[in-house]
Image 1: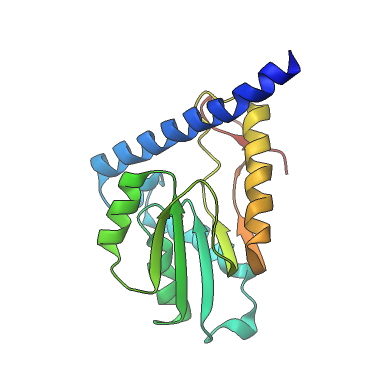
Image 2: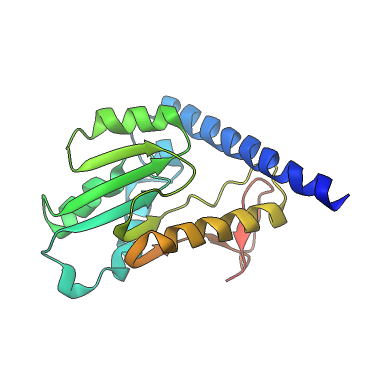
Length: 187
């Protein structure tokens, strides 16, 4: 019986990730290349997450070229943010997303050769820093145990592909409201 459950997990995860890809493709079609199109309330809250995530970048690195993995990149807003904050031409960027439609939109939105967009459920390039913003929040109908395992496996992958450091955010179990399709992590 255990073996049977284990063989179902990859299929359930694949179905969930396909559902997440579809959700974000639809959101992008509805709201366009905006913060709302990738699930944030507005640009200010979207960029606030970026501000907090990049605190992992060592101050002595500012002004120097860095490489970045952005897992769950959406349309590539973090690339623009990093160029604004760190300075133009200082970031080599790898953006990953499970939605091929979102990846196509990101490639049109950002044509800079320093930015590469990859349709993948895993980080595949070694970089100085890696960031994950909001990517774990939507689990749809996946069971919390399965999604927790996915989050942990993803963080192991991201850690292995980050030379200097990585950061991520997630919803916390310490909230006064919950939605069934969202994932709340135990800090």
